[in-house]
Length: 95
Image (cartoon, rainbow, N blue to C red):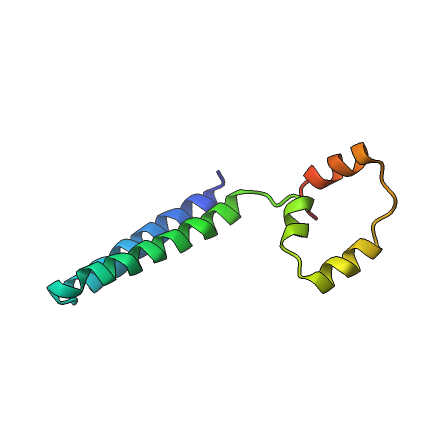
């Protein structure tokens, strides 16, 4: 894990803790369950962002995230591959 990732994680966790504490302190007792759902949602968003940062995207990941039009344009540029060569290429880190 790079120093930048560790700093992102540290800052994110501290920010989430401060944000959650402020909300909990200012929320009426009867509404705490709604706030817990909101805090959980924010934590999940943070985890998704962090996972995207630490996991290099493969060519296959890049293709999965494309819109139809983008995929159509992309496929026009791919030269002919054998099955094995295509599998190797799909698993390479995206450029």
